[in-house]
Every structure is written in C-alpha cells, then in structure tokens.
Length: 196
Image (cartoon, rainbow, N blue to C red; front, side, top):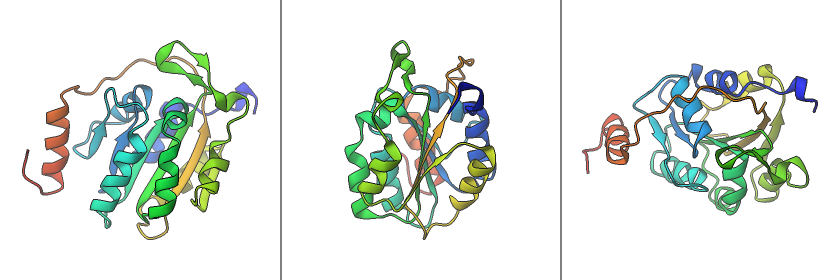
C-alpha cells in the first residue's frame, strides 16, 4: 500500500468509538491509548501504562467476565507482535463479544520509530486466522472501518480481528490519567462493581 493511501490513526479510532454505546475499550501501550483518549475520555476506557503485550489478554479477560458487553481492544503493531501468543488463546476461547484492532504503522513508535516486522515478513491477519480467529481481515478504507465499528456491537459473532495500515505521522499526545487504581476502579464502578 502506498504511503498516500494510509489511513489517519485518529480518524480510525474516532470512527471505531463513535457508536460505542456500552462497549469497553482497552487501549494498548502508548499511541493507541492516546488515540482513544483523543476520541473522548469515557468511564469504560481501560488505559494500559507499561504493560506492553498485554492489551489483548486484558480485553480477553474482560470479554469472558462480561459476555453481554462488546469489548474492543485497540493496539499497535509493536504490542501485537510482542503479545502474539494471546491470539492463540483468543482463538481457543472464542469470545463472541471481543474485537481486536491493530493500528499498524509498521514501526515501533514508542521507542524511536524503528521499522517493525509488519513492514517485511509478519502478517498479523494470517497469524490471527491460523490461531482460530475466523473473522480476521485487513482494512484499508474508512468504509471498512465504519462497517467493523458497527459489527463490534454484535456480541455473538466474534472474536473478530482487523489490522489497519495507518500513517506514521506524529500527532499531539492526548494523555489520560496514569493513575492505575483510578482507571481500574472507574471501569469497575461503571460496570456495577465496588472499588478495590
């Protein structure tokens, strides 16, 4: 795909969350968490700080614990490469309410922009399919993103996985709170559970 045809990460995330209703959104390390925050802070946003590779597993845990709620994981290619084994567990458990979106700019944005494996040999959609996630696709247009966003609400047809090639343009950081206890207790409270 040519650089001119790459999607804008903030537009993609805003579209995914525009009709979120009661969905829980898990943001991966760094830029994807900033993108979720830029789309609007929400009590059902779960932001990761320093947990590289853990976004999909946290999303899986939430999906299994709350099977009637849509759970959307938005992460980057670097984190997905680090936590690739989590896709096998998702494929085994098959939570119908879990959707995973990888924002793939083909670089490790948090550590200096080094080229990632997805620029050369790693096919994350192929990995997801081989791990048993039948609905695994690459998205390259906003109309595909919009259709995927609507599908997130169907809690019986997942898991679903999508990789979106995005541009690597620098955008202003929009940082959520880094208070892990607050983040955890806020989402627990919104889901009807007491604080810990």
